[in-house]
Length: 155
Image 1 (cartoon, rainbow, N blue to C red):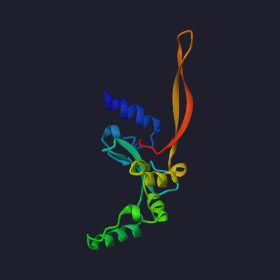
Image 2 (cartoon, one colour):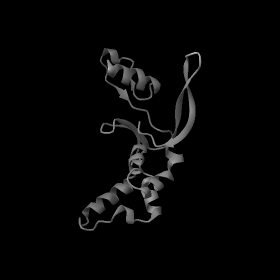
Image 3 (tube, rainbow, N blue to C red):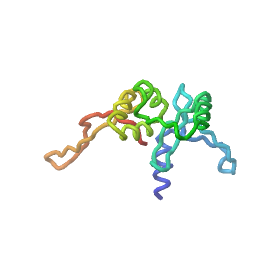
Image 4 (cartoon, one colour):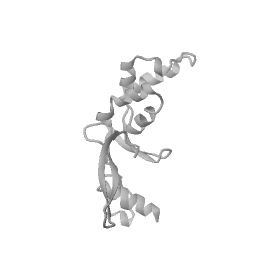
């Protein structure tokens, strides 16, 4: 079935068991599961966004920021500021808290947001290989890397 191929054969096998670890007695009914997969040295988790059907890295929110969010909600709803009216330094700071999928989406909003996200590309993006099919005169074909491109992950 496609579930077995996509999840068990492709995703979990390529993660080398990092996605979740089950108790060796799971076949007897033990339900203990450990989710150890997260980037080294950062307080983050790997999440799956069902709407985008993509994996992403989600940073944990600092409690200080959570408190600030609660205080902002208590203000009047009329006091709204356009995101684009904020100084460039603040926009870059805010973008630094976003996961790769959110950065990918934000970069599509406007030229200004794309430029801001581009400053984080080498730190938070990844290199994708561009492939080109080569046909030989004897009929065989092969694939060759024809370039590299920096992008934010949507997987």
